[in-house]
Length: 162
Image (spheres, rainbow, N blue to C red):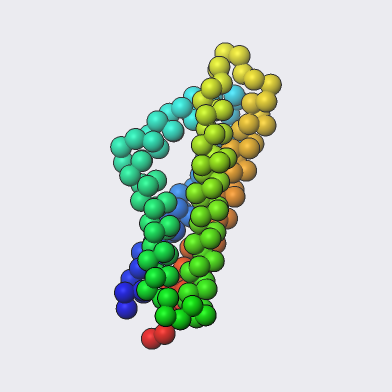
């Protein structure tokens, strides 16, 4: 019973991330793709200011920690049957979160934010479009990651013995 509630929570947080990244990739990305370098830089300055403070920061920490800690707790609760579908699906989902959210965010996404924010809007670097495309690619990777984790956690929940 406890494992089911933990998997519900992990699914919820993965769903929050999947929804946010879906909106980012499918709605904001086309808008950002039509922006010039100066506009894109200004948008990212504003976006990141809100994403990294107040409720934006709370939201980002909630989904990222919720879909990382939840599966760890679920695996501890399911440790008595490490060959079960629920255990295996949760473990795969956790690995996907660790690599696709934590590693990608810390090794690739945060440094890319710093590159974009370092641009001089009056003298854009020659690489600004490639830098913007790299940012878009990172978001697509994280969209696939969060949707995969969301689906795996739901399948793990459904596979629990009743």
